[in-house]
Amino acid sequence: MNKHIIYILSLILFAACKGKQTSAQSDSLLFDTAPVLPKIDTSKKAISKDTAFKPYTVINDFIITDTGYFDFGLGEGTYAVVKKDNKLLDTIDQQYGIQKISNDVYLYLVIDGKSILTNKENEDGMVGNNHYKKSIFANIGDFIILNKGNKISLNNKAEDFGWFANPAIINQKIYYWKVSEAGTNNRVFAAMFDPLILKTTSHYLFNDLIETDDGGYFESPQSYNGQVIFQFKGKRYKFSPDLTLK
Image (cartoon, rainbow, N blue to C red; front, top):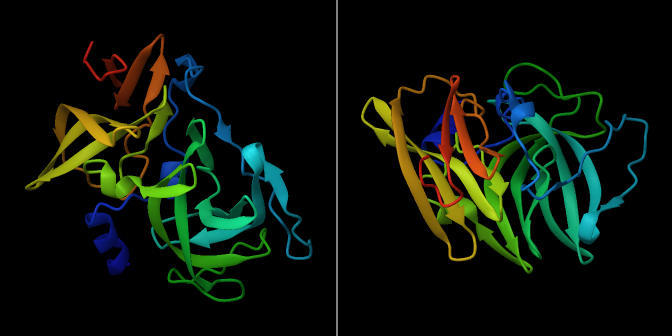
């Protein structure tokens, strides 16, 4: 478990944590998500142990060649192995999928498989998920911007892009929670990353003593009536698309 805690403190974003994947959706139905480009759906029903996996194509010729369950110590998720233009692209977090930013520009989260979990106990004494043909122990890697075939690590380009970032793509920009350590507390910002010019813009919101490993502690930013909404514990911070506080 220590190696995962260290991994978090290095501010490398994990997004497959079960808590992150099921982050609060208190009034998400109130938000107009039309400006957000649709996610490429990489999900399929669980593959049983006795069922041979059949590769399938999703939008823009991304091909899913395999799927399975993964455990990373702090949480779990499902992965997909993806090919693009008949070349292996990456193993990605299946629930986050492949988010389209603009034409030929996409965002996804890398999964780094370490060992097989099927019929083998993991660190918590539990076996792999039997609903899937394959179960692995894995590390969570970077969010990757795929730009016309070139891979750029969002973790390395966006300021303080860490475990609690919970990003959303709105109007071809990446909005996320920026968390900067400040002694025993943390300075929390609303942030926007422009993948075209590789620039981060942020606005300070509050300090918070984050006492959880839940990657969904902060709700993913949303769009509503031309505004970008950052919501936390019932309070909404409303911004213009250029991140000016309303």
